[in-house]
Image 1 (cartoon, rainbow, N blue to C red):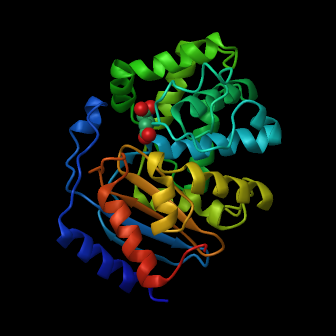
Image 2 (cartoon, rainbow, N blue to C red):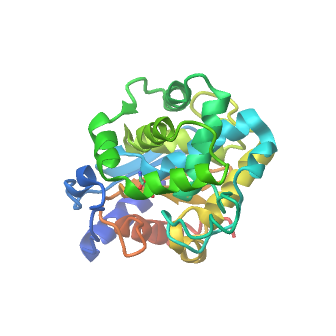
Length: 304
Ligand code: GLU
């Protein structure tokens, strides 16, 4: 399979279709990003790669980080984590407060904002410095020691993060958050504001394409069984209210974020990162989804 040829072809056709979407505007710093950018990077488990466009342009990881916070907590805590957060699709928006009151503050899944806040609370129990533990895992897995939190994005999120503040307080009142809410929110916003590029993101997610072991560093982040389970949660909950449509059209586990980042993995074969800031109506990168649809159609690569 010549992945570079396929990426070149699909990249051009997505550019020509000229459907851009709109950059997220509820975080002021994200609203300033030029939506007309796109980068792609595929990292194969045999260490080869293929890429196109602005693959080396930095963006904030946003909700894609929720897979990594979960990974860190799951590795250290094992399946006990599932007493604090579930694995069911919520059928509600990513920042919804809806189910929490009726479900004793246990979020439906770790990829909603509510779920990610609870996972960050768990990390505060498990690590003396959870921020440093996150950055260490990310730097080791990518081989890029320069990856860091973008403080102006984190501050921007804090300035307007009313729903996240409400979620953290509601869950705390229901007993599923133990730590100080302000410290917890700082950790959550910092994690969402970690900046990297498509190459970093593809390398970072190679462990989910490789039975839990990072292809770049050779380090086991999860057991094969845990890796399978995270892929299952990505497939069912990784794309906001578009997870069903994503599975139907593309058929790969993955995760998206409001910065326009998407990462998808083909287990045992590759990890693939796409970034284009214009979002569709469901909050997923317009061009990212279009690219992945074209790519999986051309290559026939899907888990189904
Ligand atoms: N930091 C964003 C928020 O909490 C993440 C949202 C996302 O990417 O889904 O609103």
